Image 1: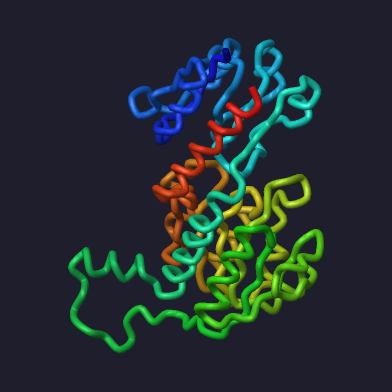
Image 2: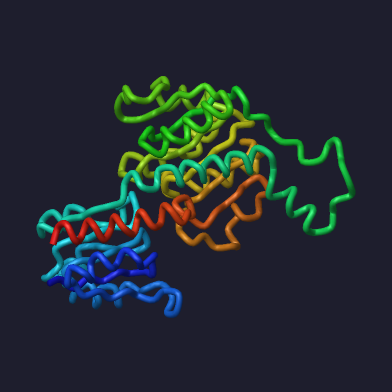
Length: 308
């Protein structure tokens, strides 16, 4: 039987599958002990046949060199850019992730960010909370109407397509997308990146982080966007050059920005992005619904149990 190490506390009902199969399991109690350090992760991983990992865990060559027993890594996420896949392949270590089960939750969070940015929900709430609400004001917190606008999707995977469906069905938006290949199942027009940036009123990022997408959106790309565009990112923080984003926002370019991801994570509360009233930053919660997290936990355990 296998020994399994999980690097964070997750919904633990799913562990029954592993335990009933006779496997041993150790879970790092991050609620009590804080995030696991790299050194402790290496020590724990070196004794494991299987790992349940998070995006915050660095699974690199150095760690893998010290894990002679390791057979499988089951990532509690869709993205796997924290794992050295080439080194895993060299060692015949199988890597799984959790596609599909968090599609709806992630798309819904992107939609929530869009609404919050367009209608200035957080600044309006803070105004009321701080006792500055003086009654109904005809010029107070004027937002951006969304119905019928043009939406550009960067990364037309399942989450990007579901986000587009919410916008198209709910707000009658016209959708185009930029991606490496045609998506016949996606009822939208494929365009080049420049066209998407210049034409879209709303731009939402859903692509994986790769060498090709790292800082895909830099200063030049940001300036190609409409001055009153809304930018949403629920993919990976590194897809956007944050220094360039701060620069153009300070110059008054872009209506607003909604981010569920940053670089690094967590982002320091002293970072300039937090000082800008038209930027909304979430602590990477796109998949944070009870249903999605249960489904993710089930899948990471099933992946291990079916493989070992």
